[in-house]
Image 1: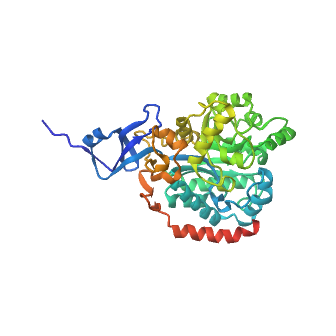
Image 2: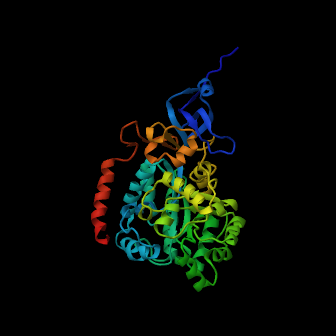
Image 3: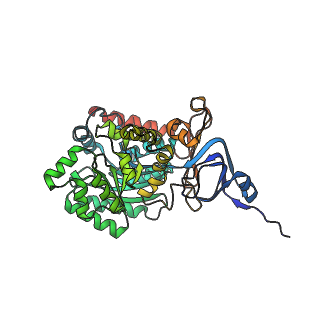
Length: 449
């Protein structure tokens, strides 16, 4: 009889609870996630894992729940430098009188790199392992994301008017494709084409976006039905509401992630269902800009895949997916009058596997399953303010916050750790650099306050 030696692995994470967010497995107790280099190779009870695998490193999380890394499916990361610059102002005056003037004067590769690094630090601290961005100078965002060690889907932004980044739609597209080519093949970075919104994009440009997206196999990321003004403008200019206009152009489809979707009729929801498009719900930003409250319960009942996003820190003012999960769940109950609407597990799905689907990355991230990348977040449920714990998934949504995140792995590597009673430590970000960034840009932007 030959002795069977345990298989040697890179890392075993032994957790009190594991929430795989997989269709094949529910909440697991006393379970282990086994990683080999960047990928998960097994998820099983800890008692069996100790028999089956020989570990190079074991992390024991006796008071924690391990979840897939959170996915921020819509943000403008570099706008962290404008956090609090123009608060309590509706969307269009906010853009026209504050945000766009700042961008015309200051947005550059350096601005985007610095602002995105600041955002990456905040997101990692809050358990976010992947974000979907939409902003100028995507190469600067890529540089920051790679330094931080966070996964990013970088939107190649397109507008029909000039900015500090590009002159016209063709210029935006070409610069975006050049950036995309520079990181093609990097497993940490992916791309989408990001036409800003129906009110800033012509039919001709949308048609180009569709053609290029099909040719390059890229998703499309846009704002859609965010405000009533957007819809009224579309009716005046095109004679139809934006969703119908985009459907007529051929933009809707399973590769489209539409942020906000606050003002939808039942018929428009059915159009999104028919095309297999995704909605990215941004409840905090929608409320802060007084854009409205998305009928999220009705959208979910139609079977539309709904992800969660924070939007940018200039309109939120936090890149905090714990806050978004809780707010999304509470708003759904208040709007629908149904306390069972959008339960905690569904809110967590919106922040994990649904986000992965919206980005076309569901085969790589979003759940804890063998074959997927090791993007994982550990949340410590031990502090008195969130005890006792009867249901750890409900606790994640209704009681815990980003301050309870203890470990964040991206691509199988530990990128953030917060030990009990200590400040968090980043693998690749120095607090002194963040302090220098915020001090520099606050002094430059103060004139717009």
